[in-house]
Each structure stands twice: as C-alpha cells, then as structure tokens.
Image (cartoon, rainbow, N blue to C red; front, side):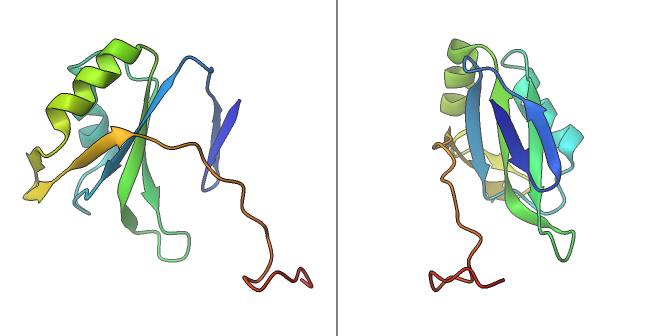
Length: 110
C-alpha cells in the first residue's frame, strides 16, 4: 500500500500500525517527533503534515510502527502528555478517505 502525504510517498505494509498525533507545537521538528516514539519501539516513519501553500506545520502528524503492541503502549503513554507546552492527542489513525478533485460542489469542470 502507498501512503501519500503532501508530495511524499513511501511503502507501508498492511501490518504497520498508523498513529495520529494532534496538537503538536509548530516548533516540533521531525527529529523531535520521531524521538517521542523511538523509546517505545521501532518507528517506520514519522511525518509532520505541512501546509501546502505556506510550508508551515499544520499541528499534526502521523507515525507508523511495525509492532502493534509497541504502538499501543506509545498511544497510552503519550496521549495527553505535555510536549512543548501543548497537550498531545495520540490515537490510532483512521483509514484515509478518498477525496474527489472537484471544487466542493460536485462538479469536476477543472
């Protein structure tokens, strides 16, 4: 399966456990972000989502861990934890929904 985030993509196996992390400080780097999860086990990827137009962080990201038990422990211990004066929201990511390319009104003229 391929996961596309902005203009990045990488292969993810069906066994990888995908974690959503919200309420991130805009000062958190991807290295800081990855480091939060490495102490719980192997991290396949850690990506902070950036605004396409401004290039600024959107305040959330995704982490993929190949071991479900390690991922569950990370979720339990990091959800609600304060990092850079922000209380994190950490939970299992929902499957990504397919979105149309229309203009929001159901027409695909462009």
